[in-house]
Length: 124
Length: 110
Picture 1 (cartoon, each protein chain N blue to C red):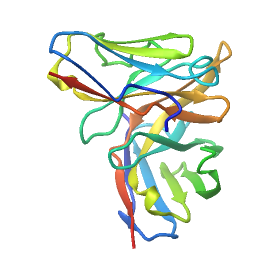
Picture 2 (cartoon, rainbow over the protein chains, first blue to last red; picture 1 turned 30 degrees about the horizontal axis):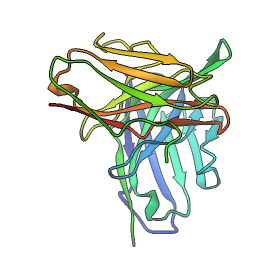
Picture 3 (cartoon, each protein chain N blue to C red; picture 1 turned 180 degrees about the vertical axis):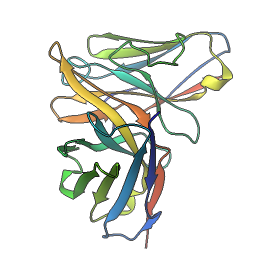
Picture 4 (cartoon, rainbow over the protein chains, first blue to last red; picture 1 turned 180 degrees about the horizontal axis):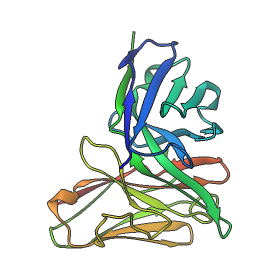
């Protein structure tokens, strides 16, 4: 079965760029939307965006100016970069396999496999 | 402030039934499918319900989902202490062109 593992620096300085990797194992990376979601300490979930297996991306408008996602299909790795970070970006960051599509004029969007998450703290 | 509105907390006794509501608008729940996630303490979210009322393989039928208009409801019957968790609704928002979540509801099994 597919498993996801996030990795990256646990501490990032303000104004720098946060860089995370998600390694996919156990299944193909094709045909899915690969999402990044974050959760500040004690708070709810925020969707950051997704990258499709072909490389197409879609970001949350609230973060779009600072987010870049990429995919390395041969090594089954996903990458998230978030620039100009501030303490407000401190959170648990998750990658998740998702499905997004339309049927009968309505969109379905859900994430069925999640990584365990990696904690990122933004502090000097 | 979350796009979808959930009650902060609910509680019920073991063996009882509980429902958790999720309220949105025509740009999200009103015109799209809803999903629900369970987040046990210290763990990643887990998909419970997708496309309003479908359960992934391995999710017991104690968990159910429904949608009416711009609201969705998660139902849990036969409550167990192991059900104590945070529950989140989610969907796609057409106006924002983004995935959105509710603020989460903490379930306490007394």
